[in-house]
Image 1 (cartoon, protein in one colour):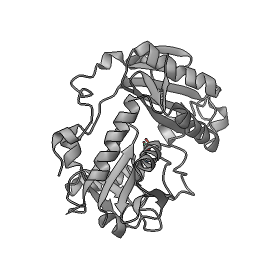
Image 2: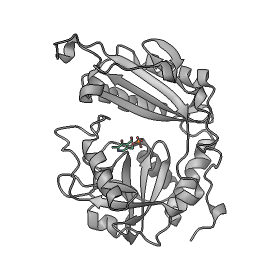
Image 3: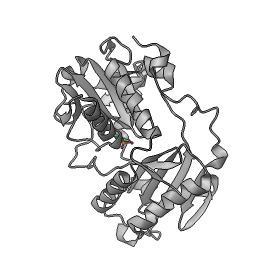
Length: 313
Ligand code: PLP
């Protein structure tokens, strides 16, 4: 059981302290206040989810794992046959400029490419003018210490399977969230905080906006197939290696997850968030466990020391 001082989570990044007036957007070559940036109702990204996006974190004025996010963004663009007409260097420049102009030291960067609009009566995606859009907003850190210790109570929603990877490739980051949203509503209806979805094979896939990691007898295990290759999960695995904790991607059955000693969700916005109850039963002691806390503490220690951070200036 953990006393509050054991957790090194920064406590200043709360909704009350965030200043939304510093939010900024980039659209079509210009930087402008976020509220002034718009997307057409006829954009195929809005109408058909014909778009891709990525989310990056700004920490102490620099961008965390910038090149890894750019790798994933450009792989998603290629996979989805999107091309906003900007080079990698130019996209990198947009992101760094958003950080510089906003003056935000702790923020989230949202980057997307939408298919754009086609002339009325024409549905041909090849006739659309694609758009690169981006914005920066202050980082509000979910998982403040009290919330973190309680963790999430998750339901494995077996009745809504993750969309098959050969229909929508989950490695190309996409907004086809029909399955994730439906599972989340079902979990909420049953009194849970969040949902964990299974893949078509009945094994654990991922949740609405996060990868799932279980601590088993052999070490950390996260699903290898049918999921987004989460950058926060990779981060936690790198930290685990530093701490001498074995970690691997593989097959995670729902039973193995239910029997895990600890479990957590990983996502860029928060890094890691404990899952302390699954299907009504406690995971381990039913609070954030020692491995989870060791990982998150090391995560903040390393980031504060500039690990994987590209300065914006
Ligand atoms: N899985 C899904 C479906 C997601 O949407 C996300 C993040 O948005 C993740 C996993 C976690 O990815 P990352 O750690 O790169 O933020």
